[in-house]
Length: 412
Image (cartoon, rainbow, N blue to C red; front, side, top):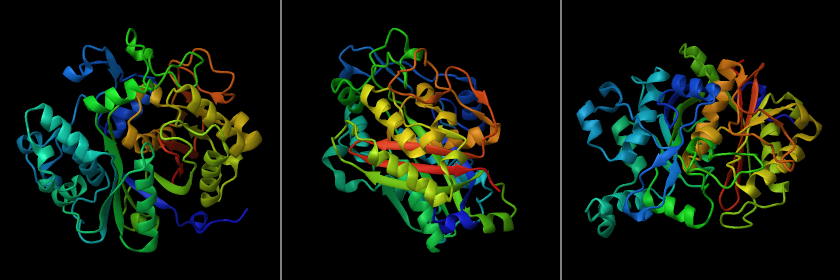
């Protein structure tokens, strides 16, 4: 196997983590919830557009105000921002603070966020509240521009949209910027927000679970009785920088973004390809990028959202990419607890991998009562599995065929 330069000690370090999710609003809270098998899914009020339909989702219930020294806003001013801006700003500010990077911002700090349909959601909620922003779109700056200004980021700042893989693509792009020398450090991740139209659209596509009688059991990845995914909201953000420079400034290294693999198939707008070749190529490419063999992977965080077609396709892709090693690599889907955070899913699941590395335990797939025989993997049902975790692989397969795998490993 050809070893990529990333395998020769050039991996980009993750030194800051921020989170606003259905399972908590800090790395510590989310890690504890994941390892405890706690669900954030509940019945929600989707407002008039739901027309009385009982819907389940995984909402964010707490958006902590960042320190004014980080974002320049007092708590009352933060609360006055629109909800989506608060969902994104809070984890970005957390990541900066966690990395001890608050006093070192400037033109060498970048920002990449995975966000989809940001204006549509903002306009929708504004319109439902009686506003008219949808009729005056020229007045709206992009969310990433507003966030960069709040955080004092003068380097490059962009949004990436690749459906469910958006925030993973953001992390990959941030790593590219750092390795190219365009920035010294980069904030990266992604978030999403529940909105009446997105809920209605996926419900009418019959993509969402109908298990409204027992919300906590609705998200059932790999289970024989799964009937669709559960939407969630929130996300995670990270501060990435060169490992050598992180060590020089005495930063705590949470992990290393050691490998990235991408592919596409585009077989259908929302239905994943039943041919595992393309998704498997993304996994194999990520391992090659990190200079690792399949048998060196200690945990796979699956994209598996709980759809009948998608889970089977991913299981086949994992087995194709890992070969015989797939029999001994634990696989779980944390969407069983968090729901599917759409644009924020890949970043949230990268956080889950970092939690597995820190806690030396694999988070479970809750609600996995009867594993589908078409998904023959080493599942981790119901409860976490303590084990040494050094190398993790996190899959994200977006609508339309955007396939991504991130390899995150323990700091050397």
